[in-house]
Amino acid sequence: MSNIIELGIKELRGLARDPALLFLIVYAFTLNIYTAATAEPETLNKAAVAIVDEDRSQVSTRIENALYPPYFLPPQMIAPNEIDPRMNAGVDTFVLDIPPGFQRDLLADKAPQIQLNVDATQMTQAFSGGRYIQEIVTQEVNAFLDRGNGDEAATVGLSLRARFNPELDKGWFGSINEVISAVTMLSIILTGAALIREREHGTIEHLLVMPVTPADIMLSKIWSMGLVVLLATMFSLFVVVEAALDVPLRGSLLLFLVGAALQLVAATCMGIFLATVAGSMPQFGLLLMLVLLPLQILSGGMTPRESMPEVIQWIMSAAPNTHFVIMAQAVLFRDAGLAVVWPQILALIAISAIFFVLSLQRFRAFLR
Image (cartoon, rainbow, N blue to C red):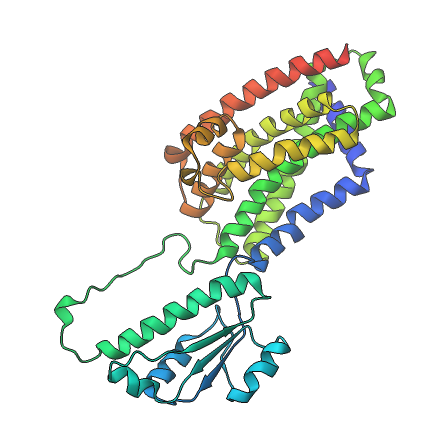
């Protein structure tokens, strides 16, 4: 045990002398999480919209009042001759032109049309924003036409309640998901880089003449690099996610950290295995791309597992990320307890044990 502790302290000292890895740790658990939560590239957010109201009627006012933050900036009222100059200058992403006599034609069942001008150079907002505005206009027009018709019995009211994320804030999901991804990524990178650094500096040969076993060397790398990632995870959850982003952490952080520790064991073993396969740091980087991308994309963190083919779900059930994502989201979002996530905990224990045995066998062969 003393050998394992001393070797782990050696790993921590080596990490402290590597500014590139230190910067990667700080970036992954701070700025990367903050930008992922606030950028919101897939969600309509504060889109610039202007309205040409040539009707100035009750229904046009309803449409104007329905375009509100955070999806849109407060609508700017402009004249018809300002449409092209403002859009050419990139001032407005959407311009809604309500023609004169719009309300009169609606009441007369003449099916009037509204013109929506879209700046399609703002691709993500243009795609979703046009659909948003179309739905808003349709809802407001239908609500105006249905008022006072007395046919309330035929109307079905849908009461929506969003659980665990009432405002449907993408930042809540993005920040937690980035923390989960960073745990796996940094665990693999730190342990793999530590082993390759020892081989490149020739210190691995020094260890072989000391009274230590390959298991001692592996365990020292696992506990030292795992401790660094675990501390960084705690800092990120408390300071970045909860304090800076104001994302509520509803579940037991202790239970989450237990699951994170099991994930760290599996991921650090994976990093050691990849480092024994790679001959140099560039080769290790290429292997990381082949391993990390499928793990992150297919584990359920980016897209729901239910939407994937069954064969992919079955294959990814052997990956620790899949169970860690399920457990972390259940604990941090839905306040799930051990009675709910115990299958994922057992799966992480089994997968971590298997990965440790396979990595130890490969590491012993690597040292011969």
